[in-house]
Length: 210
Image (cartoon, rainbow, N blue to C red; front, top):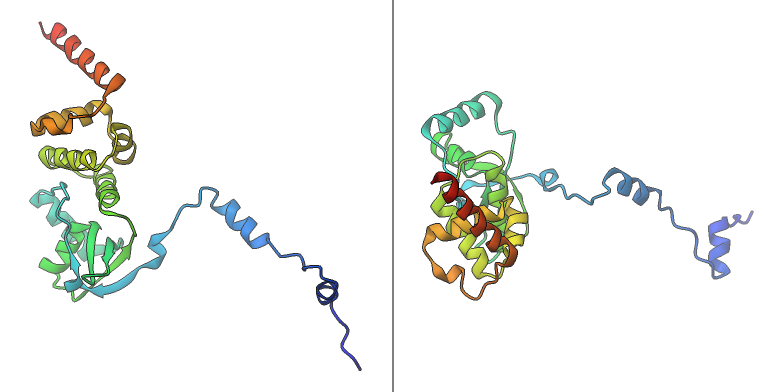
C-alpha cells in the first residue's frame, strides 16, 4: 500500500515551502527580550598555570577582606567562575574579573585547575569590563584608575563613552585626568559643555569655601 504524502510534502512538490515553526524563537525572544548573553552557562575547568593576571586591574583587597574571601571559599566552595579572555596566540587565559579568587586558588588552596568563563573583547573593552565589575563591589586605586582613563582617551574614547561603560560621572573623569598631570590627555580634545560645567562647579566651590 503506497504511503500517503503529508501536507508538507505535497506543498514541497507544488513549489511551496512548508511553514517554519517559529514558536521556539518567539519564546526565546519573549524570555530574553534584550538578547542578554550568558557566558556563565559555559563554565569549564582549565589548568591554573594557563591563567594569568592582567596588568591593569586597579582593584585592591585589604588583608582582612582577603582572609574573608579565603574563608568564604573554604565554607562555600567556588560559587563564581573566573572571568577571562582567551589569548589564542599565547594559549593563555587573561583574568578580566576574579583575580582574588584566582589568587586564593593558587596561593592558598594550591589548586591544579580552576573554573573559568571567557568573554571575547578587545583590550579597551576588557579594561572597561574589569572596572565595571570592580566598581560594583570593590575599592579602586585613584592613580591606577586615572591611567586607565588616559589609556581609553588615547585610544579614542570620548568622555561620554568612558562615563557610560565605566559608570563614572564626567566630573570624576576630568578629575582623574588632572591627577595624572598629563596635559596630553586634554590635547586636541573638546570638552565643550562638560568642561565648562566642571569649571563652573570648581569656581562655585571656591566661593563657598571663601
